[in-house]
Length: 479
Image 1 (cartoon, helix red, strand yellow):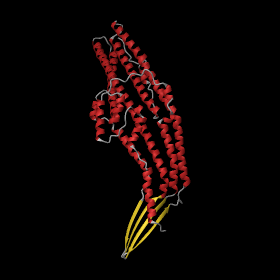
Image 2 (tube, one colour):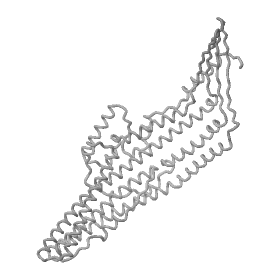
Image 3 (cartoon, helix red, strand yellow):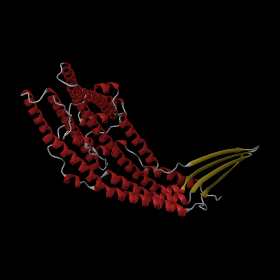
Image 4 (spheres, one colour):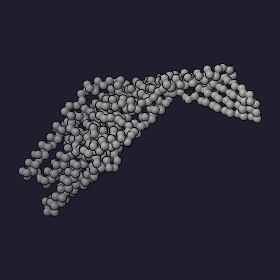
């Protein structure tokens, strides 16, 4: 051990410890992060993200939730209600705070180590003080700091993607709940019609004007309608409760929830294809996240490689020894170097290169898939729009015309009451299919808007609804 000036090496170590954190410490600013998220997704979520930390914020959120629940909840109001009321959303924001703070901490170097020992013998007292720091950590510090900054940016993108996904779920859940409520209402009308047919059939058979087969057919319609009503009512309850869970409503709030009686009307014009095709691939969330992964993997190479080669520790030492009232001071330093004899650096390089190559190909795959997802989402959107418009402008008016003619025929005693009731059921089924088609359009609209932000979601166009009103109906027996 060589003797050097104690003041010099302690001053060097302390100066390094003081200047590094002050000049380049990575800090995570939650308020700024939420401001960025609100700005990036303002058009999509149409609301504001706030992590409720104080009683005042919680009281304000509860007051706003009560205002929203006081009236029929629109789709945009449902999103706002989730933003101010959902514990799951608050958990998401808190987790973002925690993970981003953890990433920020990873941008600093390990703390210095101070060791103190006191040894005594019969006539001797020895006190040793040692302060050590990793020199290699100081060398790696700029890379660690840069990695932490990139990690926080990646978490920011992930937060926006998670919020986008949640809002899309809320949009779809709201549409499903309103559709199910409408379907339950029409199922009650079908049930009432079938019940009237069954009762009339029993009375007509009793007076000899109806045979057993036709009476049984009417009762079968009634039984099917009763089963359908029960299933539809449960579906309406299940869809409503699914929305309740996404909104984070408590028991009292769930009772106060009021859904509108019908879906919004179909827009006069669909979103033009040019607006979708002009979405810049570079601004999409999925592309930005894949690019962040690649940059992180690339920058990680230098940090991991340096850390895998060796480790260097520098320690300043000061010893004081007392022997029979004589004091001796020993000063010096200690340098500890890890020798990488047993570390396979070739495999370390292979692992790092493979990770970067995988991230590069992942980015390329996302870029190539981005426009494909948009084309698929727009096709689902436009197809569902055309189907809903066809129901509104063609199928429902035609069925209405048929029903009006059947009323005239019934008044002219050309058809009987059973044919009239059967036509009423067919008309209700056509309206139900039209509601399904409109619901599919609004779900496709939510999926398209999510895909345009870079959070692709798939949308399947159901054909059952499209076919049910075209030619389906009750097989009706005549008199």
